[in-house]
Amino acid sequence: MSLIETITILVCLSAVFSYVNHRYIKLPVTIGLMAIALVMSLVLLLLGKLGYGIQADAESFIRSIDFDETLLHGMLSFLLFAGALHINLDDLLEQKWFIGTLACLGVMVSASIVGGLTYLILGWIGLPIPFIGCLLFGALISPTDPIAVLSILKNAKAPKQLEIKIMGESLFNDGVGVAVFLVLLGVAETGTITPGSIVLLFVQEAVGGAAIGLALGYLAYRMLKSIDQHHVEILLTLALVMGGMHWPMHYTRQVLSLSWYPAS
Image (tube, rainbow, N blue to C red; front, side, top):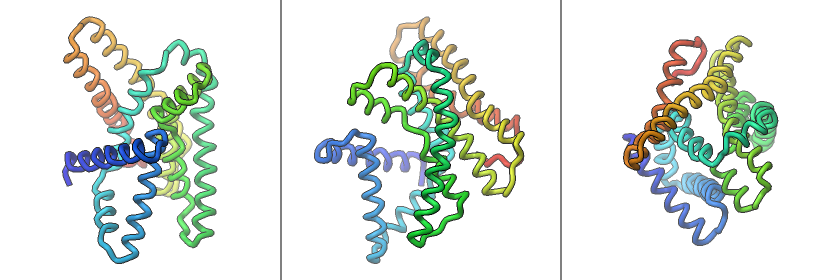
């Protein structure tokens, strides 16, 4: 299946689910989409048990999606950019230590708790999965979505200071989450990993990602400030989001060339 076909299916499903949620369920859009997607997944499993071939088609579609390219180097860049647009840098710097602690320790603690509970629950219901696989799942879902967080905080009319803390954490926890996920993936694939490789990966994904983002963001800011033409501004913004997420980190990984690093 081509990339265009994959994007078309995902966008159409999102549109239909969003309409159903807004028209009937009335949940916040991100929570509603997740809830409907979970229900539809259970429906597909049930139809598969009843002898219909829909489950096999769905599994084939999911396997055709390159997770690394689609999520880590695609959707994530747009989500982070959209969330960062609503953050004031001065407010963010005032809460930097609190945000940094939450983004680092919070993700690791959350991944451990979710992974441990998943391992126990799946074993209890007779669907045992290796513990490292459960930890990977925990690392995957622990980072919060900045757009979902912003929507909930706005609806709840949370205090500004609390909003900055939670929004800032949701922006930076993705880098930590990616580092934790890739470390665990390296352990799952090779069975071992060195402390030096862990530190190097964290510096690359979290610190390096922030440094590249600041440099490219400042460059785009200076370019946007020098013009007043919305077509060019839109193109520059799209180039910043799409190009700034993929190529710098791709070439950085090639330079570092970690022996256990999963291929992109």
